[in-house]
Image (cartoon, rainbow, N blue to C red; front, side, top):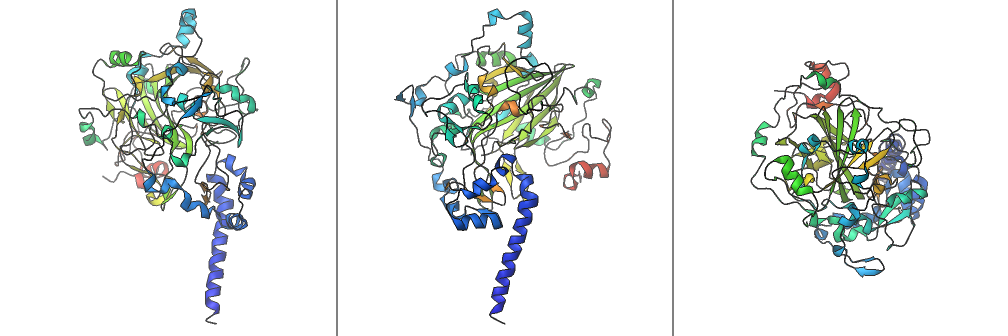
Length: 547
């Protein structure tokens, strides 16, 4: 009997793990894994050359165990070891640093002198949008800084799934990137370099903004957690829900060709899911910023341009989308195992206005985000301040540790008051009509191209097969996931300021204290005090105000 006990214990452990894994993979895995990965589950598992690996993956959800120690991203010795690259360009070996990226950003053929008065109005960026442009604190220990999408295209080659579509020296540019749409939605801009070797362009170190001086945020620390009174302006009721929201025709993603006779916006939840994002500028930006601010510039300039897309929702409501691009997303770790790496990363902040007055601010966080009243968020002058998390670049309203998804803070982002980035000093701006999917270069940057915006594919590699030594998966979470879709797929026609069109919680506070005054909950009147039941129902007991 004594000899049987270890065997029985081992068998019991095996069956328990097997049962838990099967329940997890059938009940939880489909809910947390993007559909693009789920559709290729069988092919992905079958790509492994190891019979044992395939069986363990199917039975227990542990895939690529032998690859775990081969990941250089978890090796501290690899930090800072960025490798400078030379890439073929125009048939010759030329250092990418010698390429003038500004030429790509001024390649549009439109001539402002030919615009009609109606066309000028459609392309105009309102003064108040620039006056309330956000500042962004990047993380002080960041390793992957903002990048220029024009340079990103130089270091990537379009692939149809895993098959290259053209030579690595024949790069698309910002003007013709949408020509790749003829291959459909499964085009990926795959890195020409092994990202595990940390090529220099991936880190964007040349784009680190200067740290401002003197310290402009000292007084703000004393205000964290304060209650901010609701805006009682009657106009505030009209901006809560606007436009047609997240709609699309039966064909999925409408191709950008020919006339569109019915309202349509590109959806947030596409068929592939969300995971299917310092040289002196000779152009207008510094002078414009000084003119708008009327004082010395506080934040630093980055060589990586931001993208501003202004969307008029009607009834005086305007959404200003500020997009920030990074060439690499370093995922977070759970028990010292890293998940969620991907090439290409689009993040954004939205400021919603009504009749020229800022009403709310939204910060994107992974596939979700949080919205606040304009009064609640930190500001420098009139301009709201956001924080970019280390590695993932998720956006937050405070410098802090930010748990998400998993309980107990096991999975979390970290932000701090690192270099202060002023996107207004280097931005390319556009206006967008979401009812007919039309992007226009603005009166501020009239020669900015628009082809890149209509690219339907992914701004990074396709998630690596199980046979790739860089890849593994535990309980549905991949080490490398798909590169993201671009700004066109961020629900620019959204009704609420939040990412989706479901419930939108707009907080009237930031920081650890949770004031009980919020804006526009279902079942709670405008400006009413929330009951204990309402607090639990909408924000959970862990967010109650215990003061």
